[in-house]
Amino acid sequence: MPFGTSACTPRPSSETLKLRTLLHKEFRMTNTLRLLLTVSCLFFATVGTAAEKPNILFVFADDMTYEAIGSADILDIDTPHLDRLAKQSVTFTHAYNMGGYHGAICVASRTMLLTGRSLWDTMKVDSKNVLQREKAAGVLWPQLLKSAGYHTYMTGKWHIKIDPNQIFDEVRDVRPGMPNQTEAGYNRPKDQADYENGWKPWDEQYDGFWKGGKHWSEIVADHGVDYLEQAKEDAHPFFMYLAFNAPHDPRQSPKSYVDRYPLSRVEVPNNFLPVYPHYKEIGCPPSLRDEKLAPFPRTEFAVKVHRQEYFAIVTHMDDQIGRILDTLEATGKADNTYICFTADHGLAVGHHGLIGKQNMYDHSVRVPFLLSGPGLQAGKKITAPIYLQDIMPTTLQLAGVAVPEHIFFHSLLPLLNGEKSESYDEIYGAYTGQQRMITRDGWKLIAYPTIGVGRLYHIAEDPFEQHDLADNSEYAAKREELYNELLKLSSEFNDPLDYEHPVNSWSSRNKTKADH
Image (cartoon, rainbow, N blue to C red; front, side, top):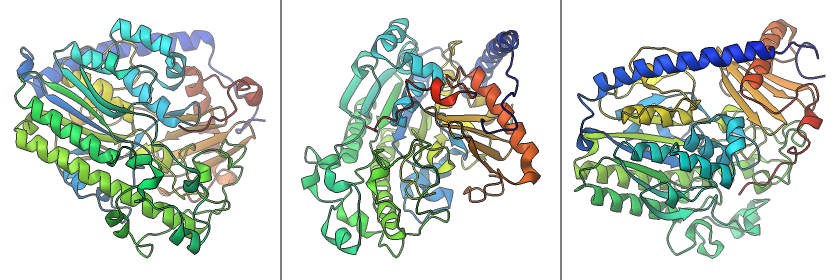
């Protein structure tokens, strides 16, 4: 029996879903027109010439949890340049990724960002042929900005099934899903001796981020700096897509960065577990590439080492971001540039007995999200939940581009200008056919449909998800309420999972792919 109150929980009728879809489209169309007018009044006096349009700098990290930035004031981690950006930005404290349909969560996240489509609609277009049709229609993110007179530039990680050279004006050093990992980088450290004598983040013999002779994060910054210098003399507005592979594993950085985090400085997460219950059944077995990075069962020592290396590569990336920000300032274009920093998804790195991102806990589905630029209130924090892919329609509106009707994600402008206090009634999440999640009104329900198990957290009071209330009869009504809402959302989002027959309905997809 599925997790919930009964196996016969009613689903919305097809007529109800059609009406809901029609009303949603009408609401979106009406508000899009109103918001475009608001944007043109608040953010530009006119949009008549290319020179008057704002520049857009999008900086994208890989595997970076929302905690891993000093300004979040959660971890003892050094990110002075991102902290500086945060002081100049609006911080969205609860930015989420919707999930993934196989182990490489970044593929789904990045394809959602490119297309503006929700998770399961993205799964349908996540092929070379369909993305070529999207390209032919001119509706991919950089294409829409190019249509408004932007010069579009991309460098770094891509991991989407279309050649970026086909949709950006200028592209440099397209990187794969991850730098190569070696066997020596897995199942470590087993003990102190293994830590002292085994794999080292600064050892270039293991290639990875060092392949080619220079750390990949430094190369992204080099290219970003070069382009900004070039754009200094260009009258056209620019859209820059700078995508770091960091802090994805192999978590490599120069020794000086690792030395900043002696193990005595690194704390074990307060929700540490040696083994997560049902880890195999929920799609996180030891064979999953992310999970085999550290030994089973987890030890506090191994988790501290992985977090040490994670913090070091984040700090190294932060220094590269600082170079980009400094160059932007030097060009004189900073005052007319919107800067967004976020990540494709988070990462567990030892929380809840997990190492990877293939789960529905906040450490893995929630990311940092900073947005700065003309007309925005520096230092403001917005706690309303959003999806990280909301940046796509937001930038379109900032550029004066009409948002295509098929775009699922919401512009952030109503939150930024105070027109609305919430953008979504709830946040939905999914991983293959084995995990589902809904977050609403300070509560989170995680469902494991294939085994009829769930987790209930009052995240407003329990932000690190330490106290599962699912089996507490006092919260049975809340559990039922959230489960019914999850079923409705799943229907609305074209979720292929049949909650009554979860194993069979996902039979063609329930074998978790290894991450790339």
